[in-house]
Image 1 (cartoon, rainbow, N blue to C red):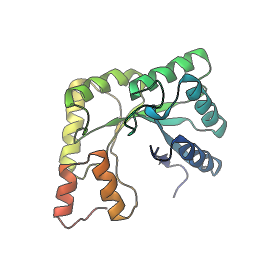
Image 2: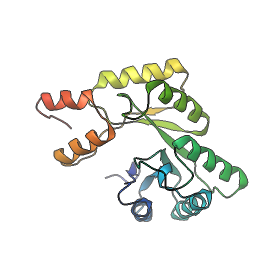
Image 3: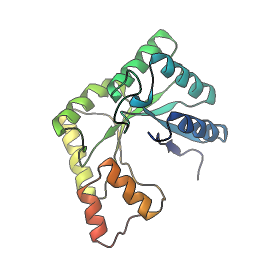
Length: 198
């Protein structure tokens, strides 16, 4: 894989943030552009966040992907990605947020299993001033992705949108992950068409 391409490192509620940070540091030491997922619900408090940002800075990481996280209950004071983005911005202004250059946030072409569509719209607009780009959740229907982008533009979202695609993983694992994160109609359509997923 070319080292200039970003490599995202997901955060698992089952494993916690430490494996995400360790792999991110290892990739960065190897010369890759590592982009860790920072899951708000996995952070204890602003001190914990400051420690993580310092670690990422020491590793040369300049980009993070900020999500709420899949944990049912937050381990600390952050319950959503807007709270985490706001805390990162506050740390940046105080000089302790180090040198992050960009922060990505999620977009949901097929909606979210736990959040209403209008709430997702309001949240994305609120996150826009604190964010650098949007990555869509994986979706197997190009029409749904294009429709979501058009809707986001109508709302006033002007951030660059990167289309999220599944990595090279075993098909069964992909199906499990897609089901867990709420990929819906497009997944059923892909399976009905013989499961052809690139």
